[in-house]
Length: 191
Image (cartoon, rainbow, N blue to C red; front, side, top):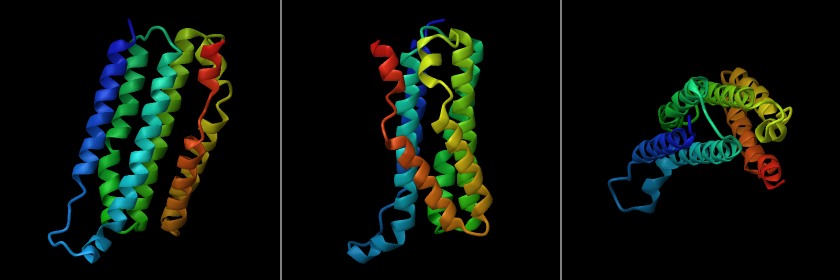
């Protein structure tokens, strides 16, 4: 099966997720600059989630550039990833609405952890489909960044109840790790 439909569907779902997220940002009812202050938490959580969705979209695109075909297992692994990403608008709104309280911070991290596990699963299924010596298999290698991210998410979720601000800082750290361009796939495809 050709990968084109999978890419198009995934792009559409991610665009809808971002659209839903931005619709949660409601403008204040008056024109005073000070009326924006209560929206700071919502805007910060939106910004972080937008960055995460951009990271997933970018990496998903690069990963699919390194494969030729998909099968049913790949389609279901991709749906698993999209399921967790589809929950990002809900946890983003709750986190921003409550001012980064423990339970929303924990659930936000749990959704990020599950999305990371789903992405990792998708990469494993794609490598299994194409082989460890395929361009994708060679590019991903041991995937230290992916495994480190999962560990940091797990730590952040555990810290969310006693120290939600620390857990949110760890979510930012993971985003920064992934904002540094990962050239592994580009390098293998250029060979």
